[in-house]
Image (cartoon, rainbow, N blue to C red; front, side, top):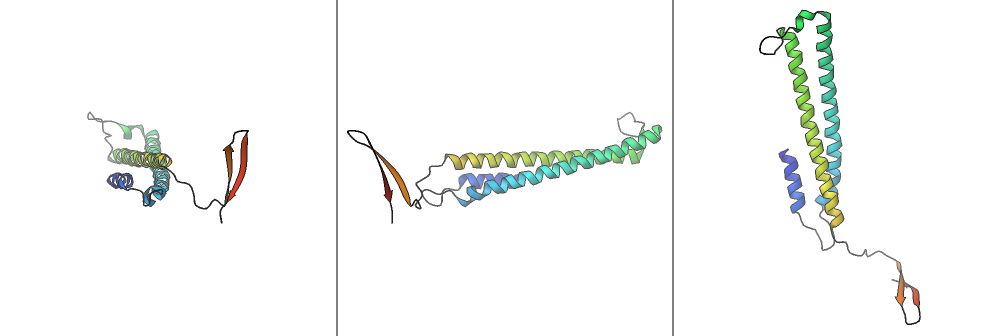
Length: 149
């Protein structure tokens, strides 16, 4: 989390390299954040699937021998193997939650950078070979073409 906050902070603090251009950190950082978000959400799915598999194993063992799933007064399973499966399920769920929060944070940062880029002033590109010209004249409108060499 701290690394993403640092990247986002540096991105927002970096100014444009030239009068009309964006910083490379903003220009390319948004794509890095989008890719990171996709990767973290994929890892969240994997951790969630691991949690589901572990809990399915717990339920399968409980369905075979019901007495193994007896719960003590403190709410924990009396059978240490079943309790271990339950704790693994909780651990996988926490991992999935952390990856999901990281992925959503990265996606939010990418959105901020996209908006930042769209709101920056843009100059005219230098590589326009010709441009149409429209002028208002006394008797009508004049159309022309300007060619730069």
